[in-house]
Image 1: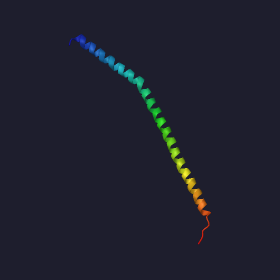
Image 2: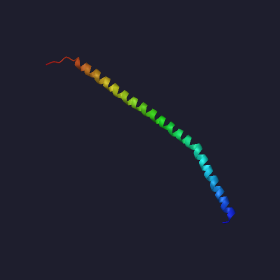
Image 3: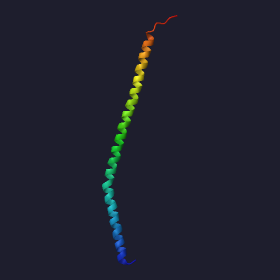
Image 4: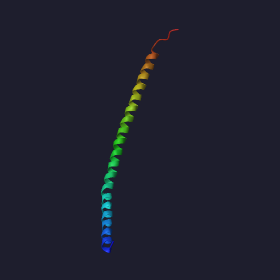
Length: 78
C-alpha cells in the first residue's frame, strides 16, 4: 500500500466517522422521543386497566353490601 492509498483510506474512515456522528445526532432525539411516546401509551393503558380492575371490585363491594343489607332485613326465627 503506498502513501496515496493510505491517505485515501484515512479520508474514507474520517468521512465514515463523520457520517456516523451526524446520523447519531439526527436519530438519537427521534429514538428518545419514540421511546417516551411508547412509554406514555403503555402508562395510559396501565391506568385504564387499573381503573377497570378497581371498578370491578367496587361493583362487587356494592353487590355484597346490598346482599348484606337484604340479609339484615330477614326476620330471625327460633
